Length: 306
Image (cartoon, rainbow, N blue to C red):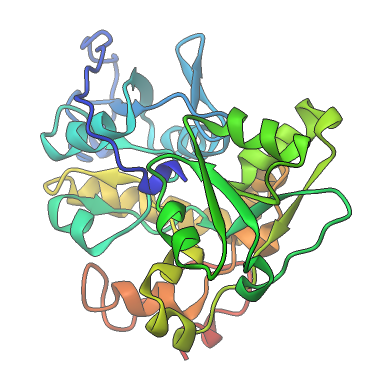
């Protein structure tokens, strides 16, 4: 779950050319990017969410931003770093934006601006084919794997009788899952879906955990990390015009079907990725959104936050 990954390494972003494109419209220039007509993006390599190929960002988040940038008349220029560097680049305004499943949090929004959610990341589990785990109760006494530093470590440690297996990267989770040394692996959903296709020998499948109830989270606060989280593109505090313009394009992509199309392209289920739970609205209302804010959804908006 790289969006909430705890890293301490220092960023080192490699910058591209600062030459501004010619014939930048007044409307595009008014967005206030560091270089008019260019949007500088900090990313980490994390396919199939973000990776850089031939100077272009590809993956789900990359495709979303590319679509938005084209609508706004902006040229995308990536700078590769790590997750800590992504956040630091935004907070120090060395880049215009960072993308890649960055989870909204009350603390992060104090130091930057979040767009409306391009998608919501559901609690996904990699399991051996033929096995079924639906609820937190189903995980009791099981061997559960994830990557070191991911917040799922805390959740797993709170499951009664569960044995934590933490690995340096996702490959370790998949290897032990395939070998039967782990029952369930907690990773970002598109990572699991990609592994199913790339490593059929593992014989794994993707399942989505039924989110714990409010009472369960109250009893065990670490269970909050078993809930879906809202992602966002993250911008510097002063980039208000750019944030609003990008959010408007993100919202439009829910309506015109483009967001569902891109989620499907990478093997995701729009019903899981593009329908927020009520907590999404209540978390941001009165914090960095108006009190009547409704998050984008492919479902019925009127039911949110009720």
